[in-house]
Image (cartoon, rainbow, N blue to C red; front, side, top):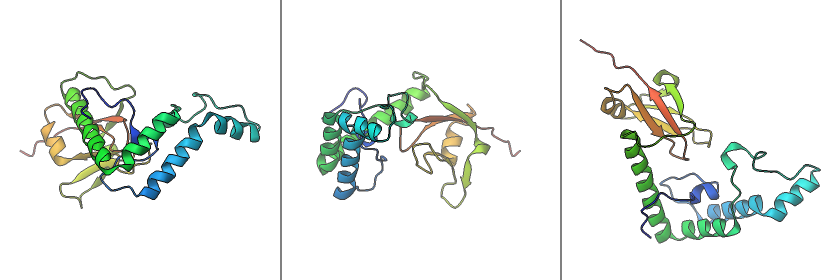
Length: 184
């Protein structure tokens, strides 16, 4: 299962799960699978809308983070891949590789991120208890520390005065602007 192109559909996104290094239980996966089936099933979506006397939702009516309606096949493939430990390990490895390639392309300015949010470092929360010290900001996907920047990250990009970071839990990006103060 080698991928030369970026992952077309994020299986975690399809099942509305966060991509983490922690193990998902079979029960968590089954629950996410069933919720995704109900949410995306055409008969269920239209019957829920009819029972509430509301118009059938269209892509414009859905929240921004769930504008895509997934097919039963896409949901089943996501579930089967994440439920099998070997397939999940391979998928996670390819997902990390795709994200690392995206970061590398960003460093060479070969990628444009639509909707890239630009913030100042001072707008991020600071956690000095972490080693190394850590700046972070929550993401709309629900990850409380979705965007994280360490002192090493800032030192590495000191000459540019900005760094682009991706969310740990989804595909959103943020550009963080900062200034380096000379101590001498």
